[in-house]
Structures are given as C-alpha cells and as structure tokens.
Length: 237
View 1 (tube, rainbow, N blue to C red):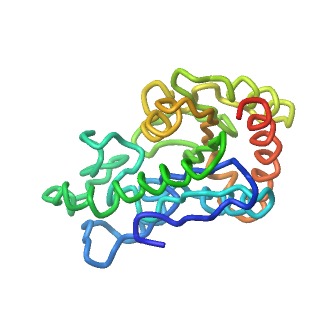
View 2: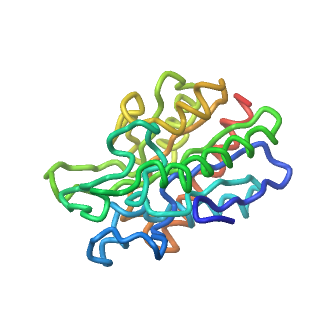
C-alpha cells in the first residue's frame, strides 16, 4: 500500500482493526543507528499484532489499517507534537539516528498518510466499531516489575466496550488487566483522535507478547477476540 500503512478492506463488516505498531520495517534511506537485532524486539514492533489482526480479518470479514513501519521511525500512537513521536531512546536503548531527524519530513511522509488512511476507512463505514490492537512485554528490560496479565483493556473516557469485554475475557480464563499494563488515560493518542473525538465506540487491547509470539498463540488470541469484538460491535455500533 505504502510505507506508512497496509490496508485490509472490510468485507460486509463495520468493524475496523487499527494497529499502530504492526511492522518493524525501516525504509532503506533511514539509518536509526541501532543494532539490527533490535528490530525483532518490542521497542521496534508490537510482536504478534499483525498476525492476530490478519486472522481476525480473515475469519470475520472486518477491515484493518496496519501501521507499515517501525515505531522507532515514528510512533503513530502519539500526538503530532509529542516529544516521543520520533524516539531518541527506548527501553534503555539510544536511537542515535533519530537525534537529528527531520521531524516535519517524517510526519508528512508517514504519520499524516497513516492517520488519513484510518479516517478514510472509518468514513467509508456506517456506524463503525474499532478494535485497537497492541502487545506488551512480560517485563521491561529497564525496570523489574511483574506483568502477570494475559491481556489488558485500555480506554480513556469511553469504557463502554471495556465493560463488555472484560467479563467475557475473564470467562475465557484470562488474567485481564483493566487499564493495565498501561492506562488509556495516559497513552491513547490514536483512539482519542479517531474514536473518542468522533464518538465511535472502540476496544483497546494489549496482548502479552510471549503468548502471541508464535502461530498457535496468535490463533488462540484470535479465538478469544473474535466473539468479544462482535459482541461489542453488536451492543454499541
């Protein structure tokens, strides 16, 4: 589609999956100045998200807009004026190639086209519902803190879908974090823009990466999420 995003068209569905950090791609003309092995880690990509999103689209006919490049190039889940939009450090790793990056050029090349694609996909739907997919690490290398949750549900002021999803996921024997391991009141930029500002119902999901790193785990989480997003859509959209 473009360096900025991949679009999966919906098939008779008003559900749109949005995955800001679905790719570790770095364009050949951008040098981040990091060990390439880091592109396989969470600081570069939300592990498992693209695969779960594609499975959900194939199973249910929903559409998706998947971020097309690494969050180390530009973080699509930040406000345009955020200091962390083009990170110079992540989880203890310096991103030296970003220190003198042309901020406006990256915004125009990647950030604005991605968010324009999200807007266009939503505008093409009647009464859309959004599933926002991210994943989180079992721990951070820079901090020693337990993260026992299998899945987290995030939101800012609109918790309607969360109240439907959490008991359904708990009934599937998952350890569910309500506003954990992050709070949507602190970090919710894409959903604040495309969902809450427009009054579109949404469910923000964080999947633990060790559980969605391989194909069986990705299939399990697609199994968990398919009925949840359908129930939320049916109740709210």
